[in-house]
Length: 390
Image (cartoon, rainbow, N blue to C red):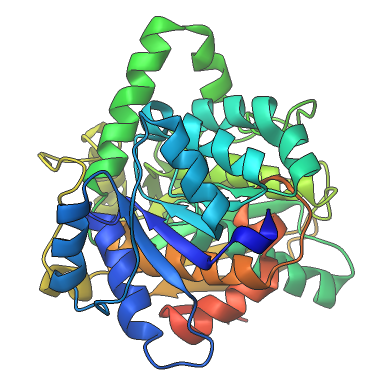
């Protein structure tokens, strides 16, 4: 099959809002570079693909591929042409299953922006062994959920092991600052997940577990992250973080896939930092009661303006704690809004990293499969900063 592949990367969903940003990034960031991939745009309509190609200023020679989630043959043809498929076509539980199957059959690498753990577990159970056999590297959650958190813990634990000869058994992820909201696709994915739980209540137990993505392994009890609390490690009150239910699962899956280098007893949670004193407590309590998506009316395919994306940013603190009170601190910052500007760059760079990766097939996380190589790419190209803080 490899001899038939004439492309490095296909951006599937390139006519949607986030897919367009991924295509635009590849078109401009790698223009004229020796390491520029051979890439193409894919979607349901050829005329719309041509319109978006011209709108983003991509080369008129950029290949355009018609593919539809409802047409498995078109997905097979797409997967067989390329080394990597990047897909922004969600909710993935509605539109992703056939593409995963096509990539597994073709032995093609795959990366998405999925934050739907029920569907992810289904895909792990269904395809992990077949992907190992075909060599397909299936990589979920390659945007704001969950790359900064997955790689942030990996970065912190590498330093913890270097300083103290062992990983930190307790790690806290704390969102210090963030500007820019969730994407329309994220909101739609949550809506579909809630519908799925209503149809199959047993999914609720899976979604509640921090170890939903580690089949056969159940670690120690984890913080719920649902109740505001004072955190002595930061000196502030903290509130629930809307992305924690997916990020924590991915962090534990990375640890699981790597053979538990951070310990089988790892305890990890994520919260949002507010401030000190009664004001911080009141803010945390208000955030816990609020709709995490506010009054957003965003639909999949919609998003903020270029100016709004460029004004966005995020700053995440990671604290590794030992039983004797020793701590290690690190942080991850992003230079664009998390839901679109930074996410689109992270997905594109994951695709580039997959081209150079010689890992085995299977269903992966970015941290377990790409690790430090992806940290290096994101630092060099995508506006992320990984920093030790003490």
